Amino acid sequence: MPSPRAESKESGRTAPPGKQRDAFFDNAKYLAIVLVAVGHAWGQILDDGAVETAYRVVYTFHMPAFILISGYFSRSFDLRPKHVKRLITGVIVPYVVFETAYSLFQRYGNDDPEYGITLLDPTYHLWFLCALVIWRLTTPMWKTVRHPVAVSLVLAALGSVSPQIGDDLELQRVLQFLPFFVLGLTLRPEHFQRVQRRSVRLMSLPVLAAAAAVAWWSMPRMKLGWLYHNRAAQELGAPWWTGPVMVFATIGCSLLLTACFFAWVPRRHMWFTSLGAGTIYGYLLHAFLVKAGGYAGWFHDPVFEEPLGAIGLTVLAAAAVTVLCTKPVQRALRCVVEPRMAWAFRQEAGGTAHASERRTDAEARTPSEKVSV
Image (cartoon, rainbow, N blue to C red; front, side, top):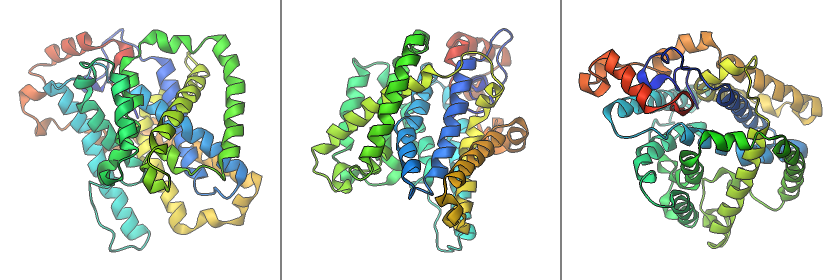
C-alpha cells in the first residue's frame, strides 16, 4: 500500500527532477485499494449469493496484486540504515499507531471496555503491515538463494499444515502470501508490459467469467478461509494433505486473475492516477468506516438485501476510499502515516548529507523501482 511519498519516500523527499512516477502502478494501486474497500463492505452482507460470488472473485486476487506490487517495489531493499529507517517510519510506526487506534475504537466505539491493546494480534486488515515488515527484512535472503519462488511455495505449503503456528503476527498469512511477494521481487518492467497486450485482455474476459462461475459453484463447497490464507488445513476442518493442494490451487488462481487485473489497468494518466500515491491512507482509514457500520448495526438494514442496496453500498465504499486517498487527507495525517522522525535516528542512519542521500537514492533505483508500501 503506497503512501504519498512511498515511492519517492526512500529519500524522504520528492523524486529528483526528471524522475516521473509510473502511471500504470499508481493506477493499479488505486484500483486495488478500491477493491479492498469494496470487498470489506461486501463482507458485511454475504447473505446475498451474488454479493458473495463477487466477493470470492475479488478476494482471490486483490491482496495478491497488492503484495506482488509491494515485492516489485522492494527489489532495491537491503539492510542499509537508510532503508531500515524508512521501514520503521513508513510501515512499523503506522502499524503501531493504527493498531492502537483500532483497539481503542473497538473498546469505546463498540462498548467493549475489556478489549486489550496488543501489537502481536493485528486488527482486521493491519496484518498486511506486519507481513510487509517480515517480508522486507527477509528480502536480502530471497535475492541470494536459488529458486526463491520455489522455496517460498514450500514454506507456504508447510504453513498450511502447521496449526501450531498460532495467530501471533498473522504468521499464517505471512507464509501463505509469501510467494506473491517473492514473485514480485523477481519481476521486471517487461513482465507487466506483456500482460497489457490486447490478446491478454481478450483472453481475460472468459477467464473472469469462468472465475465467477467457479466462485458461485464453490459457495456451498469451499470455506472462505482458504482465500484468507489465515488458517492451517486442520483448523478449517480438512485433512492435513489438503493444505498444500489448496494453497497451490488458490495461488495459481490468484496469479491468473491478477494477470487479468493488470491487463486492464490503464497505462496512461487518468483522473485517479494521482490518488495511487495515497493508497496507504485509504488502506489504513477505510476500516474505521466499516467497523463503525458494524458497531452501529447499519449492515443489518433490510435495504442491503435488495440489489440496489448492495450496489449503493459498493458505490459508497468506492467513493469513501477515494476521498481518503486525496491530498487534504494526506496533509492532515502525514504526521502519523508518514512521519519523518529525524529526531529518532542517528545522523548516519538517515544519511550524512542531503546531497549524498539524493545521489545514493538515484543510484539505488529507477522511477519504476521505487519502494511501495
